[in-house]
Image (cartoon, rainbow, N blue to C red):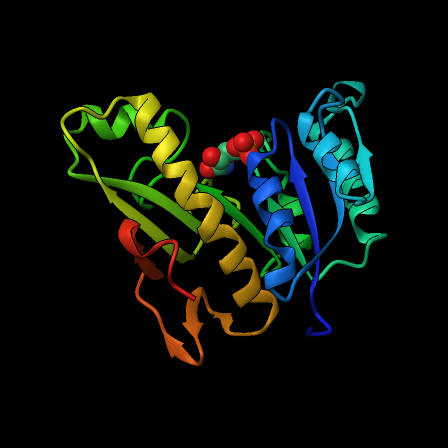
Length: 221
Ligand code: GRF
């Protein structure tokens, strides 16, 4: 175990991503020390409780502005003394102050091969664009939506029978392997970010980060 392994997860929904992160905690070097949600009904909170992880819920509807909510959220997060803040289906736009406060310590997973298909409905966008492949990206968070440096990507081939639903299911399977690995590589110091350039074991990676194909997703370590 490294010393800089304290992870806080933010979510808004069902939390299957959180579940994967929790389930793989034993085989990696990170430790989830807190889970926060902006939605009281988020099932992810129950998953955390079930795993014995501390939870906090701050209902964003009770705050008069995004800035005020984010300031309060930052206070709660900082009490956990985290080394890494992990967005896992956290459906809120972040204020500048929040992004700045956690610069280099805040990551997200986005279901597309960034820089393609930023924003929502990426599965349908990929199909509509006639893409041959789709996938998911782990990236550091910057102020511009889905635009920070990419740490890792996993790609799959789109088949003629794929729909938005099947693509989502296939991508989620990949995400559940990719995100825990990315978190582990970051907290253990294998991944480094300097001037927006990502390095793995001191070797600079290209703009699409470390790439894993679908067939290698389960076996790669
Ligand atoms: C994931 O598919 C991720 O790509 C996106 O939000 C989704 C969260 O799903 N950022 P869940 O709530 O963890 O099931």
